[in-house]
Amino acid sequence: MAVRINSFEQYKEDYKLSVENPEAFWAGVADTFTWKKKWDKVLEWNFTEPKVEWFKGAQLNITENCLDRHLATKGDAIAYVWESNDVNEANRTLTYKQLHEEVCKFANVLKSNGVKKGDRVCMYMPMVPELAIACLAAARIGAIHSVVFAGFSAQALCDRISDAKVEVVITSDGNFRGNKDIPVKAIVDEAIKNLDFVRKSIVFKRTGGPVIMKEGRDIWWSDEMATASPVCEATPVDAEDPLFILYTSGSTGQPKGVVHTTAGYMVSTYYTFLNAFQYNEGELYFCTADIGWITGHSYMMYGPLLAGASSVMFEGVPTYPDAGRFWQIVEKLKVNIFYTAPTAIRALEAFGLEFVNKYDLSSLRALGSVGEPINVEAWNWYNDYIGKGNCPIVDTYWQTETGAFMITPIAGITPTKPAYATLPLPGVQLAIMDAEGKEILGNDVEGNLCVKFPWPSMIRTTYGDHERCRQTYFSAYPGYYFTGDGCKRDEDGYYRITGRVDDVINVSGHRMGTAEVENAINEHKNVIESAIVGYPHDIKGQGIYAYVICDHVPENADVLRKEILDIVTKIIGPIAKPDKIQIVPGLPKTRSGKIMRRILRKVAEGDVSSLGDTSTLLDPSVVDAIVEGALVPIKQ
Ligand code: WTA
Image (cartoon, rainbow, N blue to C red; front, top):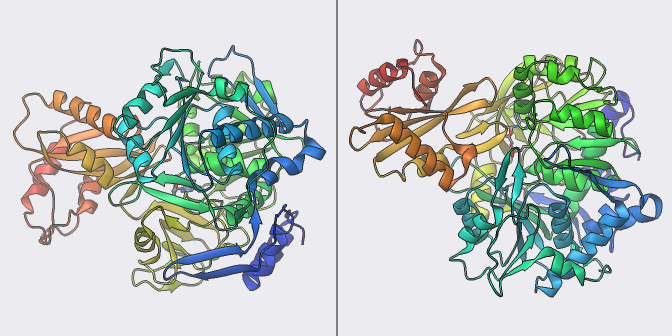
């Protein structure tokens, strides 16, 4: 079986095979990898516990597949070219040979600091090659990495380190982002100050800013690497041994640690990267996602490295020193494949074409989009002004939990439609469910999106709490994995994702649980209760609208708002700051105490003419008060 899809006909054939005989299909892909021991059984599964095992009995090490197996043929090819936040700082390049050596050295550093197979290692770092090196080094010795996006607050980091019982944290002195210099190490110090089980913190020097090194706990990356051996045998792990934990927000409570295992994740990320982007040997691929998110894991590290691809890693932000930065990088490095989020596209569109037209973008062959529904206007702008009408747009729909692309065009092969993620990749069996929980068959339909058969890179559990995994994903529709998204399937069988149908909001492509933000707001001493909803936002996709009930009328509402923003920043991070805060006398609740978010959403959208039936509310008059308050422009 050819792993690479070369035509639309082949896509259809491969899709058919993958449904008729999933085991043969995925074994065909898996056969192309290096295994220490082949599997006894391709798949065992049930969606009730749930328990899903791919390539059971196999042993492998994913870093041998990312690195060692490329050395003979492309040891001198570029794995990463790193672009600094500072436009004047020189690029750093790492060939596959160099990356292999750095990974082996750091794997030895981890070992000499007592990290063993199965231990969790947390990375809280800027976008520097050392972040990828640290993750791969952990994988090399069978340890489990847990990367926390370096924009999260000390408290959010502390929660994640505690949940995974991490003993070793990898960090840096600081982080250059735009014109900011963020004191990363100090945030880690604060996060772990009461966590006695954190034995070591290994600090990479990036900014040269002042740091306090705690005797016996904090050590410098460069000191450790200076004496580390470049030889490190890869530790064999079982196919179903965890590769990493990545925390993500859900509709309830604290973020949960999504657990991905080794073999299935490897097979899916490789297959989807190669096919969706149609990567060709020698091309340069630029994914703008941070490794702190799933896109960075699957499509900045594992997918491209498994395919032996060359990637750009960018430290900075799209608007620094100006809104032309992405395009300047595309021109300078001659990028062929560019992959970003709709929120970035919309933000850059708003700055105007002068920042685009200055640069030669003719090297581009394919464009990608991820993280949220892309609106037709942004899709057209991306297509016309970045792709110049010549580059297929792959709108990749997937989730932290799916590990790899689920619905996406195959570049240049699947006919695209603006704002459609188009068709499922081979191996992905979708189902659209109606309000009664029955699968809706046929085309030109709309409902909630589920998956009815396992795929290799699917979530296996939520760390330390399997029941939560079952309840969140496998209980709404027994026998199905529920994505939490709504979707349409049009008359051609094409899928368009319409957004979350649960209490998760998607702000600039970042997932936020309503409960998580509410809990943070409720920490304010004058807040009795709060409710947040998403509302359409021109740049961010969704903005956060917060309704708060105060204990007493604040002397100055603006001061209260500022304090709430500070609290949210402290507890979660700046990405969770509400865009609007309205003080309300009460919240629309049913007699059983459930907040009617539908009404709050309508008010936030400014659509107060069709609030629906409010007579079942405990106190219908609060709705009038909320509407009245919303009509007064809210100052931020
Ligand atoms: C949304 C990011 C529409 C969706 C990879 C999903 C999308 C959530 C798309 C997962 C897309 C992601 N079109 N919506 N192409 N890609 N989403 O876990 O709501 O950060 O459930 O993974 O983002 O977000 P996550």
